[in-house]
Image 1 (tube, rainbow, N blue to C red):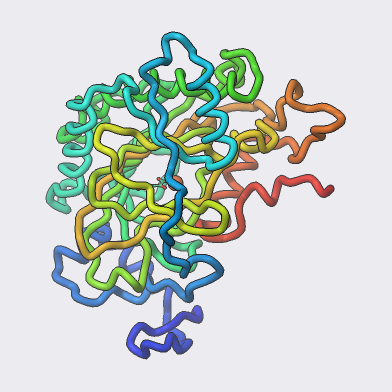
Image 2 (cartoon, rainbow, N blue to C red):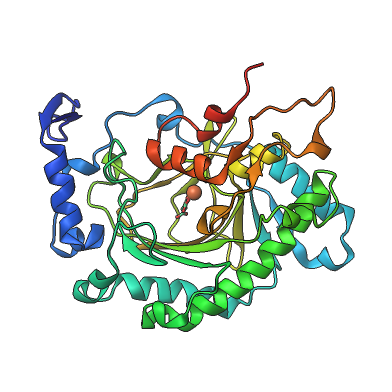
Length: 370
Ligand SMILES: O=C(O)CCC(=O)C(=O)O
Ligand SMILES: [Fe+2]
């Protein structure tokens, strides 16, 4: 039995219920949040109710001069100082930016979003064959990877596909999104490689340094589907978190709801037609010894929907790796001592997975005491 809070009281009075049973029933349905909405619910089940609003969660974005940086990659061929400096500032101060003229054709972006939506809108019977909590599978449809660990479930379903370094056999992908997922993956991997070169330069390393550390070696695609929510103020689409990878490239549609935490306030990440959102993951913050920052972000639930997004995670946990990651030696000096202890990928990811979203940042666990 777990303590939680009733929706009906309006004042969030604690009550108890058999939360595990309700989580299991939701899990066993294998039909995700979309299944609940299709069944016509008008109130969200209590497993989705966020316990209470904490610290700056309740702070609404206020009008301010701050906007998420936008970087034009048109001038990339010349490796202009302007682009590198833009990346340094955006990656080091905000941790989030959008890129335009990134080379991925508009038609590919549009088709990828449509196919992601297409998968989630397949009949449940078809989607069910991909539903699993077995982490070793390369193609996984599910809802809330941390369902049993987190304090409340998120209003979203996800199709997770491991695309590299071992090439995924196209037959393993659902037909509805097969060809475009292969194409999008190829294009995004290329863009990721370029971004790692720029990021290397931006923090004073040779362009191939981060790639030499296998930062672009493993990547996966997460196609998220956030159904319209009848009571959006009671839950979240995605709980506050920072990504446990090196880098994330995100394609979002026009619905909105993604917010980034900057200087203790939430800011909307606006939909910019044709742009891709880039954010630094916590492993890159760790190896860059804080020269690059991974910002916390969240997605609001929305009565409008569905919202569709496709995140590409560059992460080494998708293949066996004995590599030890710690602050890059070339970045260290007497004035810049290491801020984190070294870790294996396995330890880093299992710590992240064990705590679920919404607990303290995983990085704090690896921080060296001053
Ligand atoms: O859907 C989004 O906009 C963000 C998703 C996200 O934060 C993630 O996959 O880590
Ligand atoms: Fe994220």
